[in-house]
Each structure stands twice: as C-alpha cells, then as structure tokens.
Image (cartoon, rainbow, N blue to C red; front, top):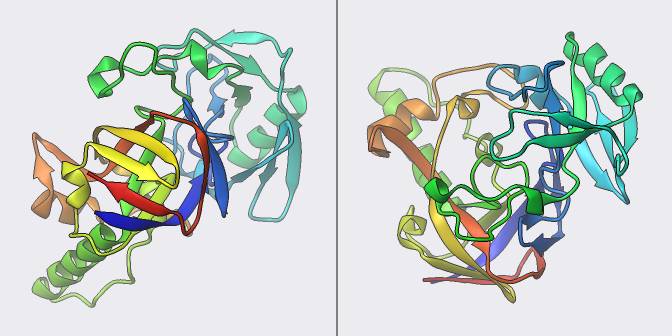
Length: 275
C-alpha cells in the first residue's frame, strides 16, 4: 500500500507540547530530538500530562545542543543539554538515572506549573532497552517514549474516527462537535493516501522514503487523548467512540508503533510503502 508522509512531529520533552517539522533524522531509538527530556517530581518520579494537564500548555523546540521552552504567555527559556549534569535516580521504566538540567530550568518550569519540578535529560538512549512486552527485540534501544521509538497514525483512520464521533453525537441528539485534532494522539509521523481506515492494524513493515521500519505493536490509547491540547479541557472523546468501535482485549486502539530497521532522513512528501 503506497501512501505519503503527511506530517512529522517532535516532542523533545515527554508530555510537553511539541513542534511540527518538515524533515527529521531517524535514529535507532526514535527521531532525533524526540522525547529526550522528562519533567520529574522532586523525588525523581516522572510527571505526565494525564496527572498534570498543564504540561501540555508548554512547548519545547529543539536547537543545537539545547531546547527552548515556551509558555503561552510568550515567556521562554533555552536549556543546554546537561552533558555533565548530575545523575539522578528516576522511576522511568528500564532506566536507572537521567541527568539534571541547570537549576534555572527547574525554577522556570516550577513557576509555570505551580509546583516544584525538575527537568532531566537522557544522555544515551542506548541505556534504555525496549520492553519485550511491547515488541522490543534484543538490542532495541528507546528514547523516553512509553513503548516504541515512533508512533504512526493515518489520516484515513482519523477521518473515520471523526465520522463515528459525529454519528454518535447525532444519535444522542447533540450538535456535531468540532473535528478531533490528530494532536490528541501525539504521533511522530502521520501518513495519508488511498488506504482503508485502520489498515495499519495489519501492517508488519513500513518504508518511509529510504528508511525501513518494523511494526512492533498496535497502540492502545490512554486518558491523555481526552485532553484538548489547545484548551487543556477534558472531555469524553475520543475514548468514548473508540470504546464503541475499536475496543479489543479491554483496550482502545489507534495507531501503531514502529521500530527503525535503518537510519536516515525522512521528509514530508516522502513516498511510503506498507506491507
């Protein structure tokens, strides 16, 4: 099945807002700059947007050896990768330590989140293996993503989901809602083309441009998708509709996870082939 790469998204800090890019370098553990930073509680436990939706109101953009954090009031801070930063214990799965950023970063984030937090960086993703339960094989490294290096979603699947949401609203006598944004699902790559909705469920291999991937698993969806990334308000969609149409094994599903089999650059418009 031939499609095109429609968009590419980087989330340098896990659970923060990210940036759209025209191209990205594929590394063994994911896209370059994607999910290399994490916000921690003072005790080293990771903070996610399900517990703290305000994280989604901050954006992180990559730079040379750094990231720039931006709040919705326009304030920003550039943080250098703490190559020699002190290691701190963390509860990130299959990882013992991460490196703390400078105190300035902790203070900036704490002030905007209204609670004490720290910012940390994964210096070497090869220290964190993929879980075999999520399709990881021997030697497969992983950035700070939950389960797989890349998440791919397709626009045909999103369009079908939007139709289902509208149909459900009309059945309940409710007005049709605004179209659900793909950003709810936080994919790294989005494909478009003449494929059936949810055809990705059956894919085992994907090639984007000249880079090959294997599909490690389908992606089960959590409560983070219930948070509108623009307003930070929570609702019932898309989980309510996915539970009606896409519920299997006690979970709801949208998108599939990819593991790179090679490295290289991908760019919007690249031809993609899935089998």
